[in-house]
Length: 421
Image (cartoon, rainbow, N blue to C red; front, side):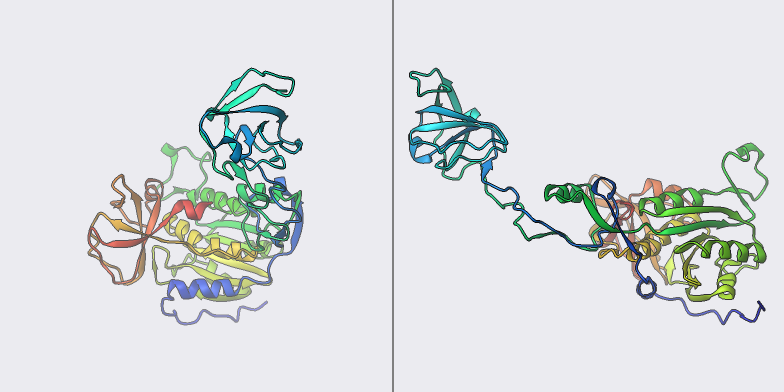
């Protein structure tokens, strides 16, 4: 292999929305699918609609513990009815005769002839007076309305309904819904195989060197820890290739190794313009670089390319830049690989409780958190190296390029909770 590829002129900064659109266009082909137990499908992306073969609930049933009655028999307060039968959940009762009630429990089918349920708190149980009062008598203290405390057949799901759609990322409640229509197995996208590597001669792993023994210029590799956690939360199978020295040959060797067996390579550091930044040039040498250098702050030196069939996302080395470019770009890319239908961040309008007079020429993401008054407070240090801002804050304010704002203005807030699920 001869070194004939040379980096071109530095391109203009690309708008974030354009970069994301191009990134997602390249997220193909979609990953293969597999069938897994519904128990094991949490967080996976559904590859096939779930269609219900039954009606849920299958019959009208009681929403309360109480008494099934005919509303016409209880029009006057204090009406006394004979309790003729007892209907637990899972048992079908006999038709309800006029002038009688059935003791019924939550979830039990409503007997034929009954049109209301009176919860037991609105009744008083009396002794029976005859053999017909098999379970005593009940006084109805409050007259019921027809239909009261009855859950109708099919009010949750009708047979033939699509209850979960292809492309949904399965939540705990979605698994419950799938189980409620009898699905013990689900068709999902396979887990993405992702290689993770960090670059930088200054990086040291916690535990290898005590804080008091750190050499001047050395820093602990924080990126490696939150990157692994974020990838695992997205359902990825992660191969951690560790720290790669700031050398061109070592970078090329690591990328070749990663590209051989992974769908995606995520790197941190080495994508800027310094003499020790080799990721961008190595990707160009081994494959193709599709985009680089974004009009966003923090996170400008983000890169995307391909080496063979493997995608490469090169993230900046500064921890806040790395964290935010992952959430705003890599996360939607990984979800799109899995066929997810909803991948973009969902900002919500909120009130800023501070002034921001110094708008940047780039689109800026300010670390902030919600306060007790329903507004947003700003972390005082917005440097891309201040990782404490991401722990103190519970989201970012998406600030358009060149647009200052004042306290009381409405801004667009993206919560970390919406991005870390």
